[in-house]
Length: 166
Image 1 (cartoon, rainbow, N blue to C red):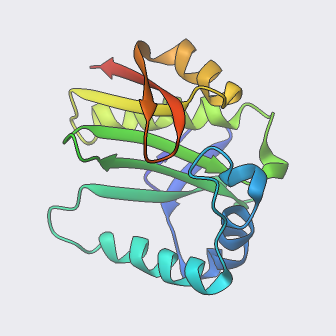
Image 2: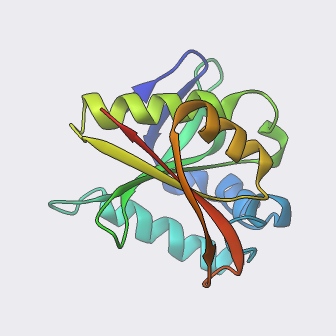
Image 3: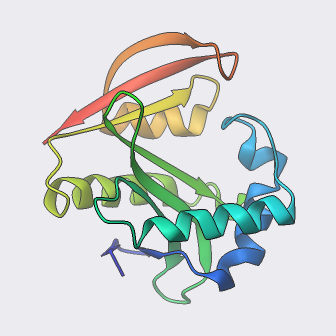
């Protein structure tokens, strides 16, 4: 376990997460604001294996973890702290659709921020979100400092950019 919140904890992904990982990554509603593409079982198998390989990499700056329930240890989604192309540590999370509207997004965001600042010793964390992703915008507006909106050519949308400093 990397860190724990009141109802959740983050841990390394494992092969046994594949069925729920695939269900999440193959759900159009979940993937709507992250490129909109869903993935096949074969693609998700390769992606899960690729992400797990980063755990062993020296100097790793690409961290994607499973989110699990404290009481029942069920897979709820994934969360991440990754160094992006601008050399900033970027926060992210995805939840299974049935786990939406339970406050888990806000809870895991706060846990990631705390972990990033206290354990990883980061000085700044950023977030990018499609402005139409109302639930995530609400979380980021309540936690991060809004910096700007801009057109994202790659995903053909308006993104909002946020920062929080330690």
